[in-house]
Image (cartoon, rainbow, N blue to C red; front, top):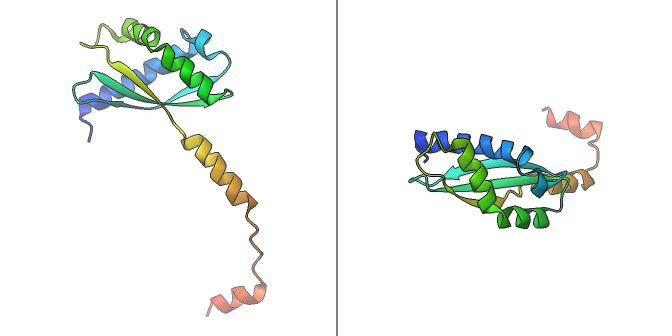
Length: 127
């Protein structure tokens, strides 16, 4: 379980990285929308594990581009939070597949052929 301090840093980094993707890193993401889904901090606050979700983009290509530019993103993060933290954490990015998985499950569920219940069956269940 994360300590209060880890949770505080996680929220701070999540907020700041979201703004960095919207403003400073626009050249990296283009028109795509990058969502910082979750940030997990190591106990010593030196590593941030960041789950990203993408909209309107080729996930693999954009993820590789972001991963290749970790140093630049860390620099922007340091400029924003450097006064309030002792160490700017190393950034480890991971793709969050929950949105695509939810879309996939929704598609499967909507394609199911479930027959309508007969009125006689419904009356028999009430007994």
